[in-house]
Image 1: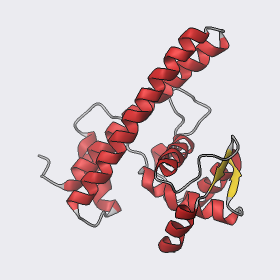
Image 2: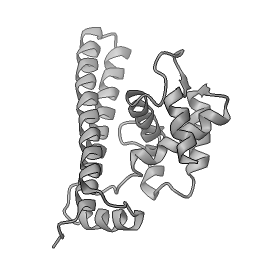
Image 3: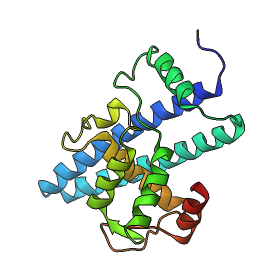
Length: 193
């Protein structure tokens, strides 16, 4: 029996976010195929759906953060892992739990700072991967079902970037393919160190 424990809710949010992410990946793959076939009406329709799912994912992420503020507990990684193992026994999510999105924030900020404030996506991702080695879980190194060439942690890093833009930690008005730290991100990095 699962005890009433705030980490169980956090684990549930993580499972939900992972499932939403998998659905967005699937929708993105459908949109890509429609675009490749020249079916632009279908691609536009899929793009709208992806936008709705992304907004829903952001709302869910905000709810998770709100829950964490209500719970007012120190989040211990061992407790989270224990809760996740317990939750896995409930079925449906068999592929395991990924590293929480917030775990990517500081490494992303550190990498961008080390790169002079901005960097190309591929290089940022590579450096974040090296920084997070030892923190990432086994399932983070698995390929996405919708894109076998893309590892889960790389995709999660990109989702973290999206959330960081919404929070004002990264700039959204830079050139395409470039991630750039904001003033707020610099302050957050200084506080974290």
